[in-house]
Image (cartoon, helix red, strand yellow):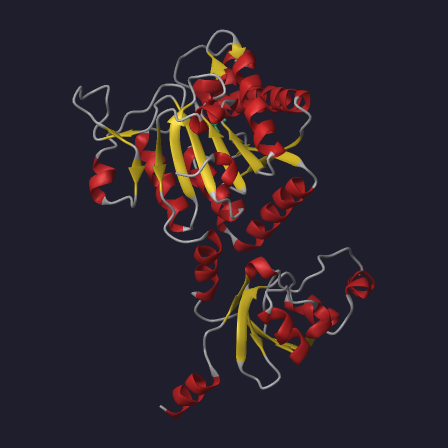
Length: 382
Ligand code: GLU
């Protein structure tokens, strides 16, 4: 088990029960301790993203809604009132340890639809690049039951995989996975490491969830499946102590879920797996060499654009010999791609009339095709 700081990019998910006290509101001292931990990781060169629950729990408190069951519009109102206070507390405590922050509220479509996915990822990457900690939550004020995650465990897993994080930490009110829910079974044994989330592992989860949060062990394992399949390792540990991240490195109890592949591979497999590319982009030999070196596809290297595609669609990239060399998610609609084909990065804005992204396809969204010339001829012959 590596130390936290051996990871490059860490998503930390905080459950409502840890951050919000039913009567006194935000647990400022606990939050301060967590922000100290985040600052320590940042000081060691780790990028940290926060997925913070607590808006609805805090909003109940602020709006005097008590503990009764809430109607949809009441929980949305609670989320609205709670989120503003929640984000404010994060901004203040992170500022105290010298860190900038930015609030990002997402809905399901922002991570599930490719076009919006690119936007959400670009914004969060930019925050990280500018040295700000993204503080993320679901946009509960407008989400309705059909289109929401509903629990921040899975949201955090999506964010972690979308951002290519190598670790997801779920801070919970339980210190890890047991062979059965310990509250129900006194013989339950703690499990320190999980290699793969098999049906046997899933059977250990039970269905318990606390009143303040929506997730139980089951949604944590769902999150684990999303994360580990995409190459993000996951830790479940207790956040009930102060400095819960430092505690992990100090050897406190935690269950580690191993990643099954590296994150880039998982995401790129998804791109490579798109069946029929929506369009084709032909490039010159220089661009092919750049792609082979792992660089982005710039408009300058594009010689021809064909097909009707939209931003976020998968397109095939063809070399000068007409054979497919790579696939990727294109940053422009076909009409705009045609306009900027062959242009230098500095000429793009003038050609389009708006400020746009430099790359036609970003290297993170590109995967080299494995079809060799020989295979292609073979396939045609058959
Ligand atoms: N997004 C919800 C909130 O901030 C929390 C969801 C969860 O507990 O998983 O109140």
